[in-house]
Amino acid sequence: MNKIKELYIKNKEVINYLFFGGCTFLVSIISFYLLNKILNLNTHISNIISWILAVTFAYITNKLFVFESKTTKAKDIIREILSFFSARLLTLGLEELIIFIGCDLLNIDSMIIKIVGQIVVIVSNYFLSKLFIFKK
Image (tube, rainbow, N blue to C red; front, side, top):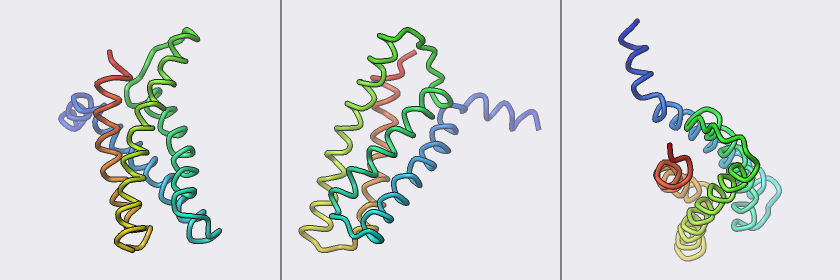
């Protein structure tokens, strides 16, 4: 049991990122499905709304549980939020490009393309967060 605990402690950040990244993935996919498939909203509008929901969830969980950011001053928190959302805007652009190519040009089902886009985004977001936003 101690070895499992040691392994978790040693890899806590990555394990937590994968867990909360998975939760963020679910927020994104479920909200996209509801907006796009149930409410029949445009694919890109559905993606942007699901992005807002997922990124808000991701900021909170990344700050508290993954990178354990200790910022408490208002200016530092604002910088952190702006950095987080700015980096996510980059990956939103990447995901929108994937959706454009997959759905608009190749006519592939939006849910398949959304899942592919999310995988690319999750990996990209980890490195952006680790390197530029929640620096120790």
